[in-house]
Image (cartoon, rainbow, N blue to C red; front, side, top):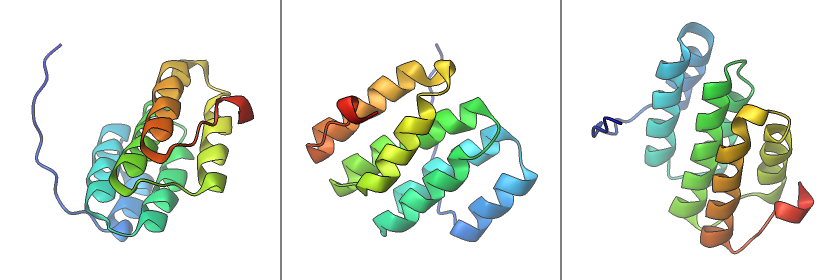
Length: 119
């Protein structure tokens, strides 16, 4: 595996929404990661994850889940309705099972909430 550092750049919600309509999955995924790391308002970051998770691209869905874990780490909390919505929907995609387990663990570590039994 070849890992490399990529600079986090500021992305607006509008730019992210435009990318969802016009760009490929790799661009959308990178923009979502940049967005949630620069957005101080947790609820806006959660909303962006929901929007991106609705993509037809399973890799983009995986990034939305990853970012849910990042939001938990950055803010120390998540909206329960958002967390449960995405986690329950992710359970329907076998390709996301490993990522789902990781995100459930991240949420438990950073927020103290374990959603395993609820999904």
